[in-house]
Length: 156
Image (cartoon, rainbow, N blue to C red; front, side):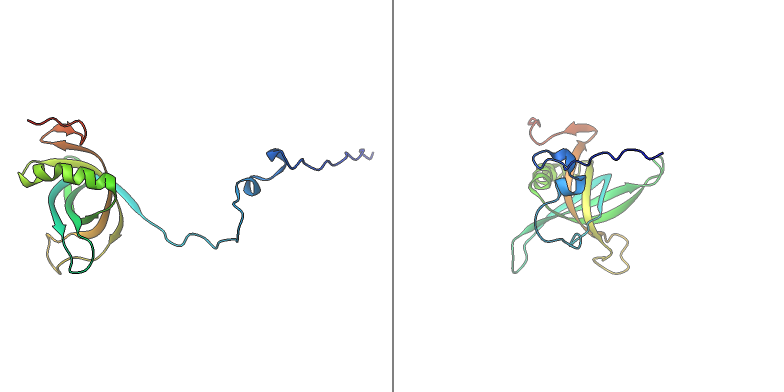
C-alpha cells in the first residue's frame, strides 16, 4: 500500500521556526576557522602575600601580587606561589583595597581567578620563585578571619 504524499510547505521567512538553529543564530559575514586565542582560567583560594607596583622604563606601571595558592588536602595543604600581574578594574579595586592589610602582615585569604599561567620562573632553582600568571578577579576576601568587601569596609 502506498501512502499518500504529504504536500511539502515552504517555511515562512518571517518566522524563526522553519530555520535551523545554526542559521538562526549565525552572524552574517565570512566563515571563521575558529578562535584566534585560547585561555585557561584557574580558580582557587590562597593567601595574598606581597603587592608591588612595577614601573618599567617604557610603558605604563602595573601591579604584581604574590599569591600563595592552597593545594591538596585541607588538613595538610601546600602552598604554590604565583606572581600575578593584576588585570582588570575589578581586580585592581580588590588589590588596592587589601594592600594596607598585606603591608601590615595580616593574613589575607582570597578566592581568586587567574589566567595565562606560564611555566617561567623568575629565578632558576629558587623555591620561593613563583609561576607567572595574570590575576583577573578576586571574588571574596578574609582578613584575619573576618569577611571584607571594598565598598562595605568600615574604618577601625
